[in-house]
Amino acid sequence: MEEAKKNKEERLENSLLEYIERNTKDTQPEIVATIPTVAMALVELWKINA
Image (cartoon, rainbow, N blue to C red; front, top):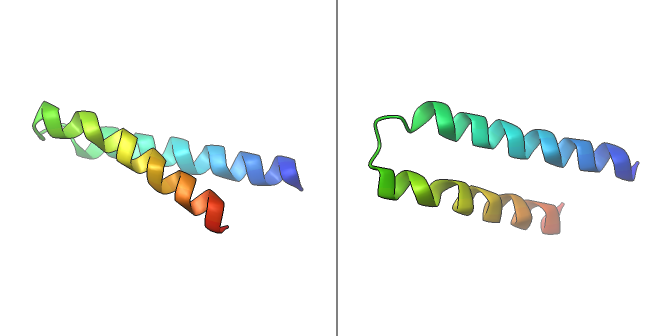
């Protein structure tokens, strides 16, 4: 059960990072640099509340 949860979390993180990479090509580099950090913080909050 714990392994399934870990796999789900990893898939979520990878999907989120791939989405960010695909959709921020035309965004200012200073903004793009902060997005993965914010996204991972949201994932950590999701893990706490899950």
